[in-house]
Length: 444
Image 1 (tube, rainbow, N blue to C red):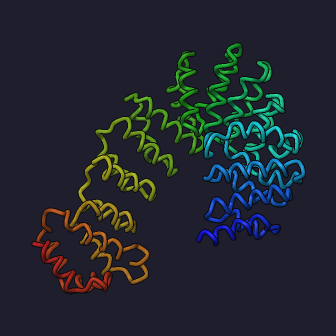
Image 2: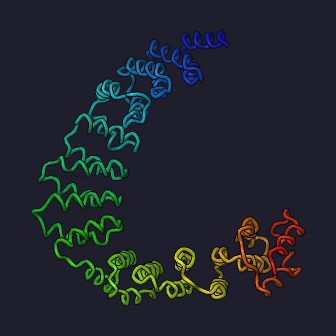
Image 3: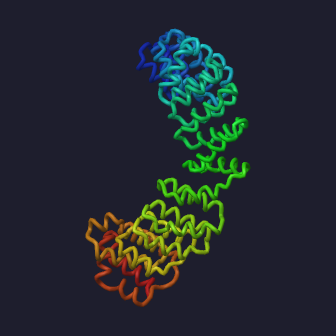
């Protein structure tokens, strides 16, 4: 075994092709990997950079050291596109994610990278490259202050496709001259990332106290932001100014407008917990827009949780599946009561069989009864699409935790021969005898 390892080390030390060196650099033996990287350093061929970069975070300290030494020997000779392609890999040791202490190594590497690539290339790639490469470039530009803060903030906010970079750019606005901050915060307020808009709004409202009228206008506009945290920042600021956000939301609801804005208004009104708003919220339960009806029912429940049974009944009778699912949530999670017979009748009437089965799962014998009824009614393809076999398997798996018996009517139905045959067809591998025995043990 020792001779074999020695032979591998010798082979790695004399290898010259990319293919061979890549194999040796990935060998399970640290001695072989180290020899391969020492050979890469000896050859100093920039085309070997991908092999070297892959080993910079090797778990063996000697291999890491050999990789870092090799990288430094080929850095200045490597073409810029090759360096840029592997820049994220070379800089991934930031933030304590690497093995060992990489701070001193990075302090040596990064200035050389900057020298090899140049500020102009880094800025261009920060603006146009993929997100991972752009993050690496922005990190260099920021750490070494290669661009003025205003230029870097403008560059990053101009990309608009990375929440990590954009959020960091908003935090950096405080480094920009005071007279330039408001335009940058305004620019960040147009971001499609809610967290970025929230940070920009908070920064703007806190930094520009000399423009109260403008700030109030911005805050009022943010009351209908799709990001709840942005709305919270706006409400908090406006409350200190004596602005009545509740009245504003009520006014917007009265004006009609887009469904999304109505949803937001209902959500915010509910969060204010003012019982005087119940009537307004109830008036929108019959709105012709599905999402507004759903938001109104949710707001009603938040304002008067004791009305959950009534709210669940209204939701169950809605024409939209999304609203009916809210009824299921109220029943299963919040304990709203609806007789299962009413649930089954309504959902069967509108053909919402999947929700019917899901709501039946907490009712042992109603669940099995409806598996049976639907198996008798549906053809094979329909039963497969609805997942009846899986539902029956789930029922059988849970029978040990059930308690209570079926009603006499249910027992008679479930023990009837047509029903037994239909259930057996759903799970033929279980066998009729097994299913019959299981039912007989649990039925009256």
